[in-house]
Length: 188
Image 1 (tube, rainbow, N blue to C red):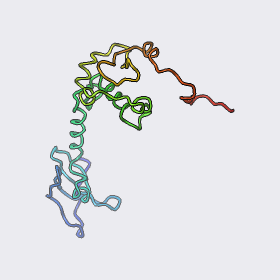
Image 2: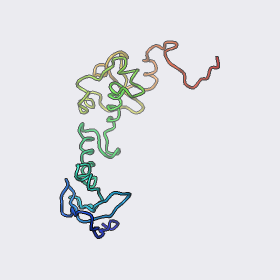
Image 3: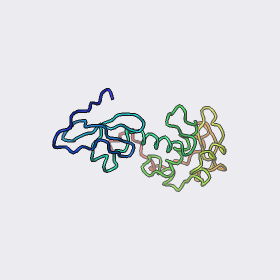
Image 4: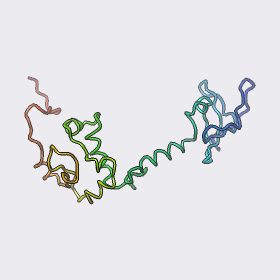
């Protein structure tokens, strides 16, 4: 509480000292900032913070931020491969997320080439990261996931680890006019 000061409560403000809002307990008046009255609160985790009374009353502020951090950490660890710290993540977790993003996230730049063509992730892998890791095994150095049949789904039977050269040989045939070369400028 070194940088947060409790100041005397103005006569026209009703005290809410002692009230609890989620994990927050109001311990004093913090002052008026940009037309908003703020209160000094002590979170259950021991951190002191300034919060608006209307945000506490509506449930918008229920902790110092520790609750959101706990929820995010548990969400990251749902599939067993993610961790809040990238250094602790499983090496295949980003491959698994990228594969799902290409197939199901319409805002992804790669969606038209995957999900837009009907490519899906098999049911065994879609929500089971551990199964994906078990089926694919360790990724060899310099390799990435490759579908053997380019029109097939991502599945244990249709996926392998392949180097760049192998993947270039396994591409769909290029159709003239189907892709736009962004880097060229043709004045005609």
